[in-house]
Image 1 (tube, rainbow, N blue to C red):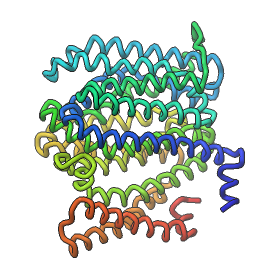
Image 2: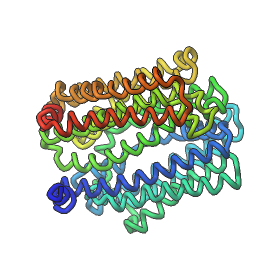
Image 3: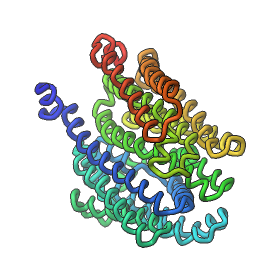
Image 4: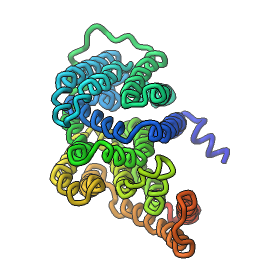
Length: 488
């Protein structure tokens, strides 16, 4: 144990630096998600569901123009071998800040038209104030991105997650005074302001008065592969909100939004944590295909082993979780929660392949997969929403993400020579282990009947623990089995 600790945390190897940085990011991100979870529990009891539905429309509307102008300055700086040079740091700052100001001006002009489209005049002022945060996020010190490139994750953890926690606290305080949607809007802005201020405290930087044209061209070369990707991703991620907002009331949309956010909040924690650690890590070994494949297989195995029992838990206990966390009326969105959990699990696994593409400097490969998902989402979302109700939004997402995920698996095989048989074993073994959790839940229902929310949640937790225990016995303790699954 001591030797393992020294190997992972005391040495100056790439693995040790990643684990030390990952510990910082994990602790900070976990703290942020706890704050967000507590905030949502409180806000659903202070604010009406209409406020969350309206806020979902605001965030989705802002994402339209934001996605159209994405240049990927942070990712370009991290991936580029010259990303720690002054010319490139200054160029990245001007790219990010110029884009954010342009986005805000476009949203300021477009706000009345969006308000008219949804038949809500209040949206004009709300949208104009909420999107002010974009300007502050665009002004973040690019030295913070350099810290990420150099695997100094502790600084980024304080900046990104510390700012988020300050925004969450601000939202909570305002909610008790304002008791309306303005608490959500102003809290969102406060989060962006806090991140920007913290970035200059922990990563001091004075942006240059001009930029180096060569460095701009160098960073934009990466951005060519990203061009159009955020907009395509927006269609996949936000199309359900756009369509459901037209078909259903703000209150119904609020129930749906808060239900899927219950899944997306921890999933965003996992995706961000893995992305922030693996992107620099894989960039360091981008020419070593065998090592990249080994890392991808190991991370994917862990995702399915942890994620599939959690999916079983939500299938059997999702209604109880919503009732206990948000209140009885939110239990109506349990079907959407369950399907969203399946979508989220596949998204986490899919994101690791995306990170491989980005580390190899090939973001255009991910763009093609997202284009497929966006097209499917565009075709399916309206008929599914009409036919199946609110859950139809997530059913359309599920079909789209399955197709996109399969597309990416085939692409990564061609790029890195990934062994698809080993990759497929990750899913099959995790699925077989999760059957134990299903058996526990079915037995509990057979002998115990319908249980109140707390008892039902406890049964689900026991089922998860049984599955995780079996996973430990079969995978961790069985070294030969581990070697065959992970390709070690």
